[in-house]
Length: 499
Ligand code: CO
Image 1 (tube, rainbow, N blue to C red):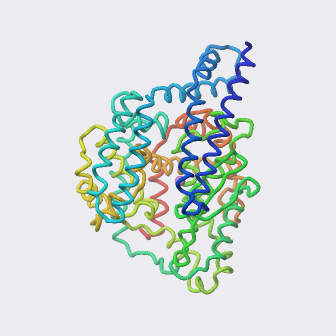
Image 2 (cartoon, rainbow, N blue to C red; image 1 turned 90 degrees about the horizontal axis):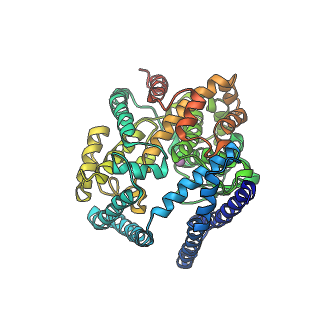
Image 3 (cartoon, rainbow, N blue to C red; image 1 turned 180 degrees about the vertical axis):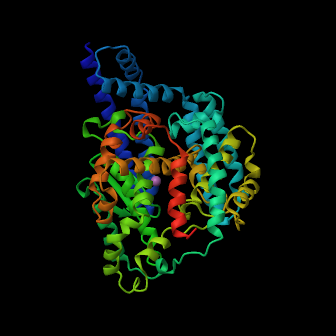
């Protein structure tokens, strides 16, 4: 068989798997947005059945044979080769898992999640701790199954951020600690900015409409997506031509809708920017969670939390909410949405202290994997680190170690991608400012399409063609460098807090 025919077989097989996976995603989206209570049981079964089908198709020996033949072929284009290499990597990894492990971890995940829910209800870590211990044991086993160099945590990091290494993150978070902790203390010594106006009453419908307008301004394509409401905002996609976002609206806190809209919009632009011709193939998928998060954070923090963005948009906002904002200037609004204040809850944290939340989780995950930390001690360790980095006394388990869903799902190695994304975002945006003439003036006028095009051309269209590191070097001329985040943070917050 010719390489061309073989490649076509590979593409056909991959697209069939993609059809199933995206159908699962659609069921999952519905589960979060519209599914009635009683639908849960059969829905779980349906998702389970389809997941099994997708898995069986992917680990099929026939696909393995096609892949090994294609790997040794000299007749593929560079892009075709890249698709094959990436799929082969995924395939080899998937084949490592024994069926017994896959079945057991599915069961443990569901039990751990239930234990987490129960513990949250009772605000008691001990209710969760035994199941979490089983989960962590399984994650250690998973690291052994997958294989790693140096640190077992590397095996899990690689699932979310291919190529990321524990020792590199150690260096990164050491820089976060040595630079950001003191800077936040300096800020805390300054008079606090006002935020009272964010908590006034903002009726539902005009908030929703304003969010839709923001998405349109960013260039989110409503012919290739839609926005709905869910308790925890997220982005999901069923192809590059159907990318859904969700938000939530709190009538007594304007910031809830505001940030989730821009953040998820940034994620969605990435997915909408992938090329249709790569549907079902690695080049039609995002490169890593860190790069994905760089897109949401770039829009949320660099654009949405910038003064320029609110030059025009604050005028629009004031026409929608004249009463609520009558005593607020654009400068006060800008300062208010950038308030820095250490707190217990990660998802409510500001753009600086956020990284301390991640640092705590990173250190704990690493310790759990190399056994230097035991699950039974997590509450104490958690609270002590929060005191050390954020100088807050965690009042309860729900506001502490029980706040995140991630570990109950077995997602260990996920958290660091949030910080990586924020740091990549600054580095990318710096470069965009250099390459797009008059970018800041455009943002002030609410013209955001050239920025979207730049991101599309530099990042979105490539999918998994380059690794995260290669991508960063191609775009900015160097690998990820924390110094850009720190420079940005100093300049911005010294201005806001008059330092
Ligand atoms: Co995100």
